[in-house]
Length: 305
Ligand SMILES: [Ca+2]
Ligand SMILES: [Ca+2]
Ligand SMILES: [Ca+2]
Image (cartoon, rainbow, N blue to C red; front, side, top):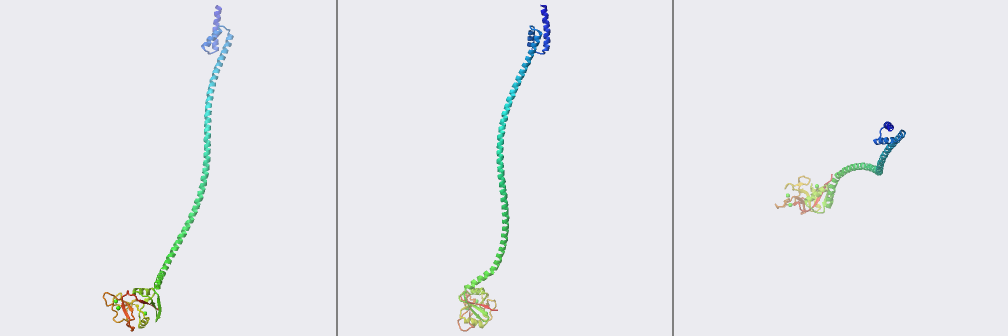
């Protein structure tokens, strides 16, 4: 029994040594080792301890590998998710890229169309500019032509005015047909119609002549020989009793009929114009003062140069 106790003490010392050798293990392992080595020899104990350590290491490695596997699995799942997300983003981006490409193509077409439109508008603008310049030139030419025509019109109107007056006079002259007679140094236009003294005077003026002025007895006799009751160019229209010829000269030699001039003898009636009345055969007593609005033949005289 003493020997057996001694052996146990020795074994206990070995166990302590093994514990140092095995370094740190769980308390149960120590108990187990103690129990084993209480029944087995030291060599077997060491070998068993090594196996245990290896097993523990393997267990630890296994655990670590399991953890790593789990981590890898988690990482794999995460990566799978990320891959899916990236796949989705890639798809979305591809679609966006296609849309952008389509938009780019459309914009390119629109740009080309706009460029064409711009070119066409530029051409049209240039044509319009050219047309504008041409029209401006034409307008200026027309303006010049207009001014020239206006000047010509004014000149023609200036030239036309006396012609119109002559025409009007011609019309007036043509209104009253006449018979032409020549005597002495004068031509005589003898009317074939009758009119008042004023119109007769105006008709002679229209012809460039004067109502006949009797300058001498020969002329008086010539007029009597025509055998017409006619106005002569003598009146006292301006001043009663003061007789003047139509050229403004005063009466010097007169051939009044009997009791003439009498200014009608009626205070209510004026007789201011003179006629030749063939009421007797005495050529020096043939004139009568008469109401000027009475209608008579008349004789215009044109004195030759
Ligand atoms: Ca005369
Ligand atoms: Ca009179
Ligand atoms: Ca009279």
